Amino acid sequence: MNKWTKDQMAQRVAQDIFDGAVVNLGIGLPTKVANHLPAGREVVLHSENGVIGMGPAPAKGEEDYDLINAGKEPVTLLPGGSFFHHADSFAMMRGGHLDICVLGAFQVSANGDLANWHTGAPDAIPAVGGAMDLAIGAKKTFVMMEHTTKTGESKLVEQCSYPLTGIACVSRIYTDLAVIDVTPQGLKVIEMVEGLSFEELQKLTAAALHS
Image (tube, rainbow, N blue to C red; front, side, top):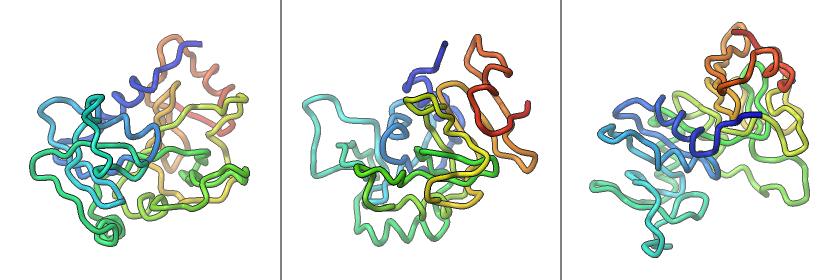
């Protein structure tokens, strides 16, 4: 089956980030979005560990591990960028100062509930970090994830079975198969990978879809 690569997914998310937006990119897959922001578009990138004004990932050999994002990955700082106490960073998140956050997820429900911090597995992330603050504090929450688990189970579900990060907070979902909006009428398919039919996508999705 044809699928979008991680970089193609990141490029698709980047297309939807408007000029002048203040954006937080979550740990993992969403960090790739920074490398695909269109040239000439001003986007201010924020990280909950206390950085604002990040640029793309540094070139190999030019990493500075005193300058990292929340996932402990080295980042670059654009002119005018700064770093500060994480309490101030959380105040930005909780105060509604972020236009968009892009988060990974284990599950998203049909009404936009988000589960992205714990699966109950022994090796699961031990704490929620800033995910709850981001999911609720940002004006829009985008989710970027693979459509199914490694064992083929749908990550889009009618109701989440994992502990929730936020309730009805997700507005758009980007997977390796489709772009899907969360609407009052349910999950609306906006775009699909080339060669995939709506019926095939529905078979891979535990929640009901509509076009």
